[in-house]
Amino acid sequence: LFLKKIKGKLFVWLQKTKRSCGLFVAEGVKVINEFLEASLQLHHLFTLNTAQELFPNADPLKKTTISSNELEQLSFLTTPQKAIAVFEIPQLNKISNQGLQVALDNVSDPGNLGTIIRLCDWFGIEHLICSENTVDCYNPKVVQATMGSLTRVQITYTPLKKYLKETQLPIFGTFMEGKNIYKTRFPEEGIIIMGNEANGISHEITTVVTHKISIPRFGKLQQTESLNVATATAILLSEFNR
Amino acid sequence: LFLKKIKGKLFVWLQKTKRSCGLFVAEGVKVINEFLEASLQLHHLFTLNTAQELFPNADPLKKTTISSNELEQLSFLTTPQKAIAVFEIPQLNKISNQGLQVALDNVSDPGNLGTIIRLCDWFGIEHLICSENTVDCYNPKVVQATMGSLTRVQITYTPLKKYLKETQLPIFGTFMEGKNIYKTRFPEEGIIIMGNEANGISHEITTVVTHKISIPRFGKLQQTESLNVATATAILLSEFNR
Image (cartoon, rainbow over all chains, first blue to last red; front, side):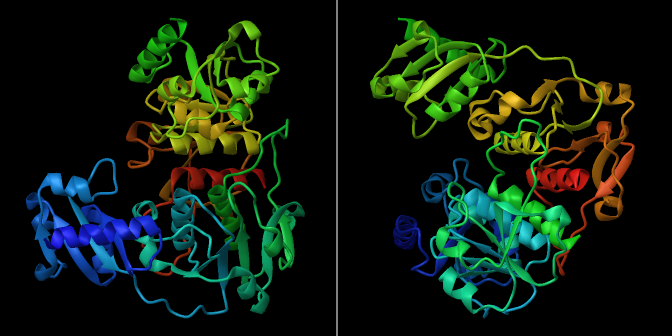
């Protein structure tokens, strides 16, 4: 019965693809344990009988054993793992207006968002700012792709233009006509804007960019259309940090 | 009837995930036209009636109009595009043993291979060497992800260790204990090895690496497990080319 109730919640949540119910789903022993170790509030954990012992940090009262058939119905993965957990979405800290930040202007692909979160973690970026139309970071695909990184990077959804207008930090965005990144000296503090996969940085946000930069293309034919947003983020973060 | 024959061929090809029949599949108007413009040999083109006029460079004798139902059956995509084409896999040029090359040691994810091919194109890398267990670059997912880049980067599958033992070029691989890439001066010629998603560079290949390097991690907690292989490739190619 409880399982049915949760399932209902999950489906509602998936349909809205929004965080209105304040919960998110994580799957697999490793991923779930990463979240438990990061002290996220467990809402409920469903495990196969064989995987019961693999979660020493989970409150036993919040554990339910399910059959592999039930797991298959609950799972968002094509190949379900041994367990699926529902966590409460943590409260956000306030954004500190300092250091190096990454801001996403309507990034729509969960895989790209996941990769960018891992990159932020790797490069010690504590704040990732997302426009309100950026794909939800608690989308199951993002959660699976980022694994533990999701617990170490603060992600804030906010009206992006308003946020950028109020900051004192320099704002960097990549544009064809921008200054070669290999010839630019980057400050230690600033905001790097990354745009949507198909449309790049929106017109609205372009108006608040203070520094236009570009990643030079080295191919002879110069026909490559563009770099993937996640690989472009990797190159920029590497340049800012070197 | 012809459609059935082709469909049979496609399925055989998909099952083997190998290039034994010498053909590969591309879908969508833009992608197909990129290959036509690159003068790849068209084997056959199937289009919806509405998309017929969109391929000015395709031999009319090799065009068949199909229904959207038939397209759905042929397509490898969850959302089929307006056309699907079968091309002949081009003959490979011999690998020139100079310049900067990227070599993949059992990269297994089609999305990662696709991203790496686009990166090679962007950074002017003409030769991508793949170990024989690296995912097939004519896998439909790779073809769709790379779009035109697949026509501009020479990709060769070869026994990797043998190839590396015979080259005179310096061989770079990333290892935890390697030298910080931001403190390394890179030559203009060399081979960059990228390893498998789960296991990194194999033991066998490690023995022929001449320069161990590393991408430093900047996070305070230093818990990020690793960078995705495609984003690591982006950072390395950026450093080699800067």
